[in-house]
Length: 58
Image (cartoon, rainbow, N blue to C red):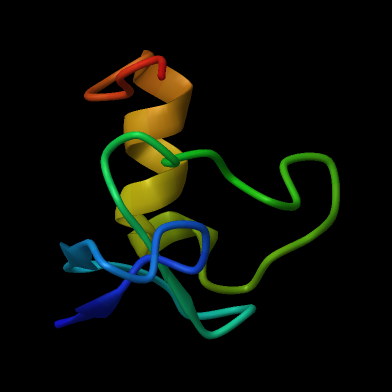
C-alpha cells in the first residue's frame, strides 16, 4: 500500500504499474487511456475508471 500521488496524506492500494504511482478513490483515472499499456488487461485503475466505478468527485 502506498500514498496517492495527488493526496499524499491518503493511503491507497490502487497502483499504476506503468507509471508507478498510487491513486486514491477520488483520483482513479487511467492516465493513458488512448496510449498502449502492456499492463492494461490486469489494471484495476483502468477497469474501475472504464466502469465509472468508485470515483468520488471532490
